[in-house]
Figure 1 (cartoon, rainbow over the protein chains, first blue to last red):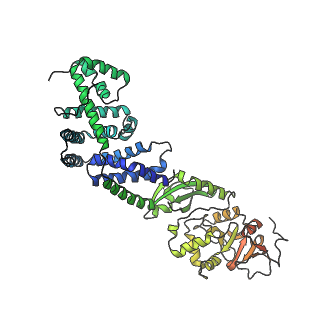
Figure 2: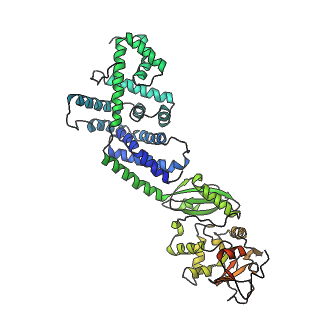
Length: 174
Length: 322
């Protein structure tokens, strides 16, 4: 694989990796460092990547690994949690009632997700926000696909409990 | 809170999976059947569906374009910085021992004889500041194949793009570029090369520049010898390798008391930039010193250079024994 093709990797995946790390850190500055580190690591390891590798899953794995190290500092985790609350609080003008409720509930969800145990939070974000396959999530979290599935399940259960008593924008039951 | 009945607990995982669209067909059917008769599980199903749809809604909240562009620009700056420092290298086992070949994005940066050593630990690359090394055999594969072809005499040119950043100075760079112009199968002297870079008399400085040639073989400093025809030095103390390389190119050498010389009596001669070539015995040659002569191993090389036979000694009529 040539060096030129790494430019294509950046072009194709930077927006999504940025979005992922931005969501995890809740700060553009923190995300920037992690994004840069992710792609620099990828650049160095690029020659050893096999030609048929899933580049997207590989980048998510690098980013997740870096995020886990980043959050090893409990203080950072707390700051991100606080930022999740600040970042989403009443930043937009209130729209129609229904939209307002939806936005509030999403903000609540953001805070609940930010408070999840790290692995559950990562698994949940990778699965629900970025739609990664469980194999890829397992690679990111260095666990089995079954464990990855279990992390998402536990996350959903905790979210369910945390949102107890809040009105949810219900879909009609089939 | 009323305790959950066992049957509800048993399908909880399947219920969550069903609500979030991840259950197998059989599990989803069981959940649906159960939920038909169980109001609380029906409610659960609906809430999990709502949570799932809420979570999927997060997919749409992209950062602002300006924020994304700023992140991309910062990333490109750092990547450019790292890229300019990264050298990708491979170690090639060859008839001349292990040879390290390293390249940057701009071209081949280093060729280094490692002898028996097989790792970067033995390389000068380790001592260079501002360089990041990455082993990359795949990136080096083409260079390796061409190098081995060259060393086996199957290829006469290594037309590699070079990155002369390790040359050290403008003068050394000029020497390397001039040395690169010496054709395959030809031999000239340090003095002649000094003249070619516009520094007649600077043969010691030229020899010194070539002593630190970061790109032996591809910058063919092995084709440069003393004015007497003595092989003098090569890559520190690797005179044997110089001899091997010359022999690959058809340049014969003689040995007397550990003193290697080019076998001049078996080579054609070109004076300066003349369009003619001579036999080594030609009376028309200005002197016997190689200071202004180039020796040429074969008529193949003579033909490749487009030279005419000298009208006095007629090397075309009296070719040297092959």
